[in-house]
Length: 412
Image 1 (cartoon, rainbow, N blue to C red):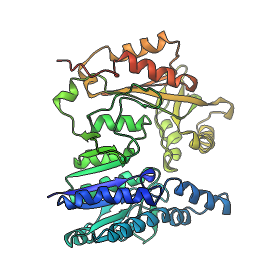
Image 2: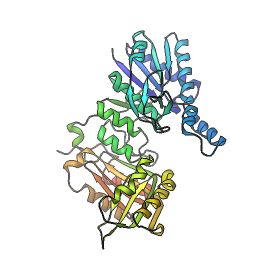
Image 3: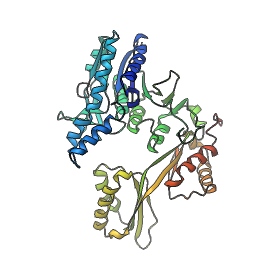
Image 4: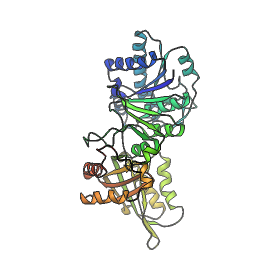
């Protein structure tokens, strides 16, 4: 007998028929003797519909009220799911974020979980109930409803699994697991049996849509095993776990990409202590995530700073960068933008112990006529910024070059 947290996304609960399918799957675990907590997203398309309603009222809706509005999508699904389970003869209880005592900070629309008080959930489990918790939402210290941002239900599920010390957190989605790359782009992409937290973090940061990055951070911090699997088959998916020796023997595990990128270059920045803080401080304070940052070697006391943000944040970033640049003596005309870039990267814990991986990546791209704009690396990742037009070509070329369509040759 164990405790399982099961999370189902919007496509899995898109209609009543699919909610019944979810209930049947959950009850198989329940009848096997497990305690089960189910985290549900809103029905497919519902969050977008609610966001559109809010923006129909006003171009700049109050963030607090938008969170109140969009959080209702998950309320519908947990209620319907619980009704279905009860109709099948098993007691079920639905809990909203504040009822499950998921406490967040006060950043509406992008709140972060700071605490989970599990006594209510555990009490319901001990009564033999299946507990359905609304994903994507919580409440702050003032009792306000907050939402966690896109993919927030993944974070809810893993945070609950960590707090409850669950045996596993099963993330059900419309794909069969984590693949070596996007199978929609590369048909011969291969499903991975397992992947490390660090690799999954890098893949999520590069744009892989399977898991939300904060959920992987939670899992890594609290060592929560995640099983990513399909809602529509019974086959095993991919386990996201701590790395082991066998993982280190595979040089490259996957190729990921992100087209939601925009490049900003501030030219002629004074090369002085504190300048970077004055430029990036306001951007960070506004909640904008800056990704790749490159600073050129200074000449005559001046340097160029180039960085990337998501395209949706480009306009706000540009306005703040212009203000900051003026404050450090840079004119508006010296700020350049390019919204037509993409990020492509290779990931693998085995890269730490193998030389020549980066050079092979660069050589492969050069052979296909793909120019590299920016480069960033970590111990287990090499990523580049390229012209968006070449994204698919780059991904396919790298996937083939590193033999990811074949079962890995575990070196060593």
